[in-house]
Length: 120
Image (tube, rainbow, N blue to C red):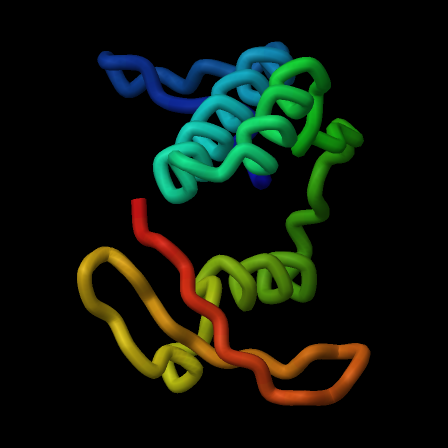
């Protein structure tokens, strides 16, 4: 996650970000992800058990608090990833009924695999 060091107030004055509410973002992110999984697999007992365990632990945030460099090389690197989609369009083979089908290469077996995912 990349956060700005501040933002604009209604009067367009700059407001510096004094802290990062990591616990808030962690709990919000956890809730959204686990709710999505629950909706996708409502009858799976194993999934419910794993989700129950996930609510008891903090996860998804590794906060270093380091400032990013603002030199052109660093900005180009960040921009490269911000402008890319999460999955390349050419890997998507089907999209219907809130389900997407795509292929990927398994890095261990080097085999092409097909995956189905739900859309929230």
